[in-house]
Image (cartoon, rainbow, N blue to C red; front, side, top):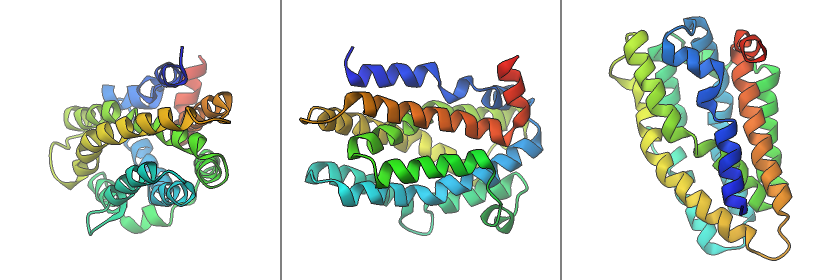
Length: 226
């Protein structure tokens, strides 16, 4: 099994749609308060994500890889409908004010998630940073439609700005994750790249995301361990 297949298997084994938080969302049993807390906490990652990409971009020697990262960064941050702005519109659509989101205190799991991505994109080898980004964005095209479906079926949100973030990411991250997989293949083929460390970076990201969801809905951690 090559490193890309190995990371794909890691993702499937700890896919976010298998977490009790998302299973509850899809079934309509997720309390609205938990969804609102998720909106507050996730902003810490979403608002930081462009800087994670920028850090990787600035440290990458390969011009072709830099261009691919730059395209992702551009999609995230340019214009009045940048992705942090779209997230705030989702939050407003479920009853959370912008100020409540932007001033929310991070819980321990959220801070750990941001810290992990800060480290892996700024200090770890570039291949490890790309692996951590891929471990997340590879899942989004599956997660986003599930969220939209759950919001429409169970929470009365069938259209409007509250869904734009998920609709956009459900499309863009097909391309982004595909590019990241190609980049990862090119990077790990280089001499001196520690493939075990690359796999470990992906697993660390997957674990941090799993803990993040447990942090915004503590009851789900109890369900997972039952």
